[in-house]
Image 1 (cartoon, rainbow, N blue to C red):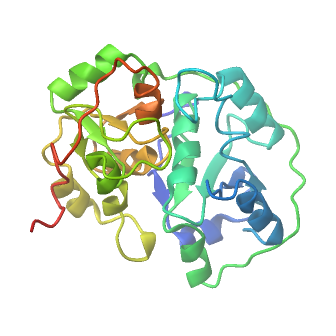
Image 2: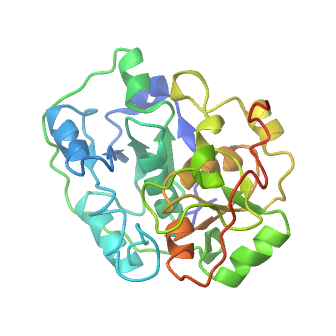
Length: 291
C-alpha cells in the first residue's frame, strides 16, 4: 500500500490493459526510450511517434544526477530535483504512471524504481515495451501533450537503496549480491564502460536478460520463482550504473522478494582503486548453459 492508502499495483501492465486505460485523467504515460550509443536517439524517437498522451523523460537529464566523482555513471537525482521533474511532467502524488521503452525495460524500470524510492507506488512498466504496444495495433502519435504542472511531494524509502560499500560486501559474503550484467562483463572478458573489468567479489550472476522471455515479456511468475529460488528474501542488486539492474528488481518483486538497488553499481565500486574485483565465472548464472 502506498502513502495515499491505495493498493500497490503489479509492477507490470500488459499492452491491452494500458490501451483500455487511455483517457483516464489520473493516468500519466512516460516514454523513457534511450540508448547509450546515441544520447539523442530516444528523444528523437519520441518526437517521431509515441503512445498518445505520453511525456518524455531522459535517462541522463531527468532520471540521473550529475556524474561527478563517486556514485557511478548514473547517480540518483536529488529527490527534490526529481520531484520537480515529475511535477513539470504532470505527475503528482495521485497519478497512475505507466512507463515504457523500446529495449528490455531497463529505462522504464529505472523510472519505476525511482518513483517507488520517492514513495510513489502507483507505477507500472509496460510489459514488452513499445513492441508489445505495436503488436496489438496500438496507435502512435507525434502530437505533444500539454501537461499541466502537478504537485509531487517525495516520501523517501531508504530501505530500497544500498549505498554503503560495507553493506555491499556483507551482502556478497551472505550470497545475497546479484550482478545483473551480461556474462562476458561479469567474467571480465570485456568492459566497454568502466575503469576495470570483472565483478564485485562474491557476486552471483543473474543476467537481467534472462528474466525476460519471448517478445521481451517478463517470464511467468513460476519460472521467475524458480530462477531466483537460491537467493535470500532481500538481495542487493547491481549492474553497471544502476539501470539494467532494475529489470531484475522488477522480476524479483513479481515473485515476492524485496530486492535493494546498489545504485552506484559496478561503476561506483571501481571508482576507488583499492576496492577488489574478481575475474572469471565465480558464481555463474544458474541458467547459463554448461559446456
